[in-house]
Image (cartoon, rainbow, N blue to C red):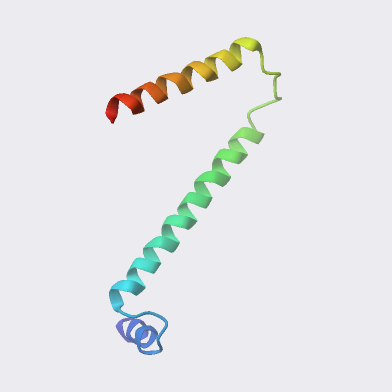
Length: 76
C-alpha cells in the first residue's frame, strides 16, 4: 500500500502523501453525506402519503426560523 501511495505522489497526482490522504478523507465525507441524503430521501418516500400544509404548519415553520435567527444573533 505504501508503494502505491508513493507512486501516486511521484506521478504528480498529489503533491504529498498528506494531500493524498486529505483527498481520501474528503471523498469519504462526500460519499457518507450522499448515503445519508439517500437514506433521508427514502425515509421520506416511505413515510406515507403527503398531506397539504396548513396555515398553522407555515406559522410553525416561520416561528422555528425566527427562533434560530434569534439564537444566531445572540451568539454573535
